[in-house]
Length: 119
Image 1 (cartoon, rainbow, N blue to C red):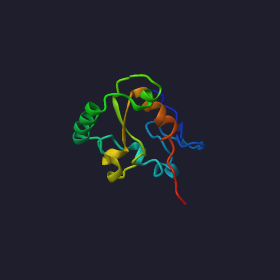
Image 2: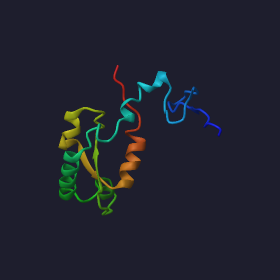
Image 3: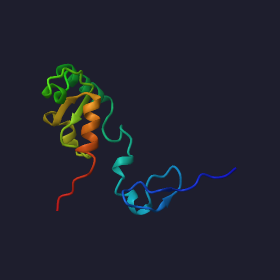
Image 4: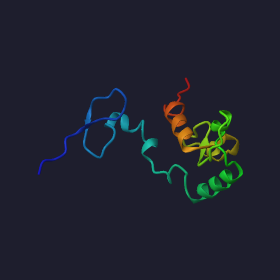
């Protein structure tokens, strides 16, 4: 039976080939280590699920839709500033906002997508 062909590294601009089931080449794997952790390893555990449910009960409407005059049920607690593993920022309730899935997906793909570096 033929084996699956190698695939390109998922790091933007890298054309190195990696075996199937691997996302990044050796050079870029360390840069994306945080991306490959499970949600539980990132802090989204039972404690988070309970806290999230309480927050959504107090903030049931999507804040972005509300600004447009629409009343849409919030289903996601979003970190306004991405925590990127910073536990203090993760649990800081003033850094949270209630969003619907659509608004959350748009925000994540546009604003939160790339890691910011400070020099």
